[in-house]
Length: 141
Length: 191
Image (cartoon, rainbow over all chains, first blue to last red; front, side):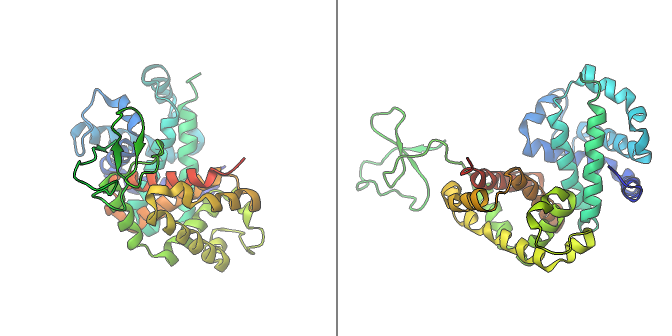
């Protein structure tokens, strides 16, 4: 359950991070690959070495989708419709990976925002990313 | 898994790397492995790379316990409010500000973090190191072991905020592996 204040906080943070979406996205992905080697199996078709163009562009796509969703969280199911279909029928990523990625995104935010990543911001962001992952996996079965 | 053959000129079982776990291949060749002290090697012992050992020692040597401990516990109580169930006598946990300013939370957070020191000093036998603490958490404190993972995630994030870009993906992996071993050891004596 997200309060109005938390929704504000979340959309503020993602608006601030949109200009560095590539950096944030690439870093979160790299953290996931380092801590959960199994997640790399979904990227055998891409070059996921640090600072590779594939990694940065893919990271950017993910962050921009998360930022877009944050603009109106109550409409997540609508905003994510196409992505739901993509993940369910084409990508078919095991949903535990969404948890790993969300955690690595939180670590990335902590490393970048440092003191500004307060417990309240962390709680709000954790809730948002969980909701995002849940909506994303809705069409899986 | 590294195995070293016993050098013929070495007296008895005295190994070159005293104090470090070294597996010696016994003459029979088959599964039996012995440490340099002759004790049977637990086939499930955790393997640490040099990088992992150095990273853990480094992080804890620079650790500001009175900052990180309180911050990690407070964060856990804020982000996962159901964990407050174990702290009924800690006074005001009503909101994030109250939790972050609560002196009992601060004191306990520091205590918990110092509890990790023993694991840092005994990385090759964390299981045994925490056997007693595991019994305590199970029999006396009745803490659901899932909570250990929640706290360790919060600790990871606090350390990430402290170290910034120095908390690279590789450092994160080493730190999380260490905490996972600790969490597993703490949950081991539950029945």
